[in-house]
Amino acid sequence: MFDMLIGGVSSSGEDPHTTAAREVGEELGLTRAEGLSGPLFTAGVCTGYNRCVVTCFNYQVDLEVESITHQDSEVGWGGWVGREDVGRGVRDEYDVGVRGVLEGMGAGKVERIQWVPDGLIVYEKYKTYEAGRDCGRDRIGKT
Image 1 (spheres, one colour):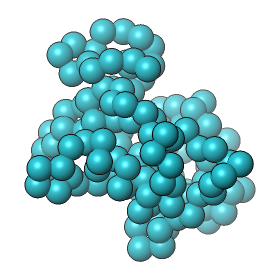
Image 2 (cartoon, helix red, strand yellow):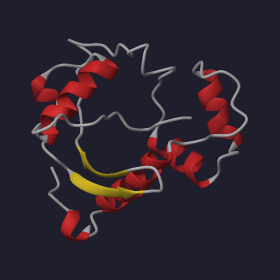
Image 3 (cartoon, helix red, strand yellow):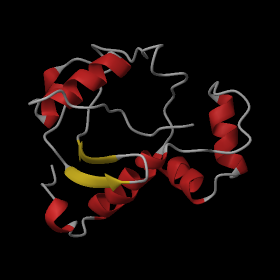
Image 4 (spheres, helix red, strand yellow):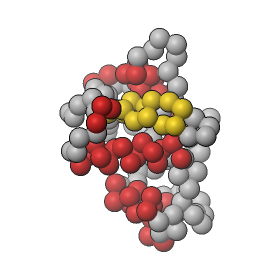
């Protein structure tokens, strides 16, 4: 499965910003404190197997001073997929163009683009946030 997000579970009493900083460090090797934004929005996830509140942040990579290093135990493959391609892949899991992009970046043979279900829920909330519409009571702010 493909996941468009980086994240993890907060430890007891841990604030979301600390969790986000830890997870981006663990999963991508990115540790600059100034790279991580303040909270952008929250999204409630309630599925048959997971109930949680996701707080979303942005991390600005400075390629002059850092590089992405995937954590082998959690990331099977990673690459930059643009917003348009992610959107097309979400709308059509058999999109030939997006499958070609993923395969061309080393993801192996992709018959079908399967997204992590929780990521799709948060992605929908992100689209609302990005469009600047009111996200209701879950909206924290826009940076």
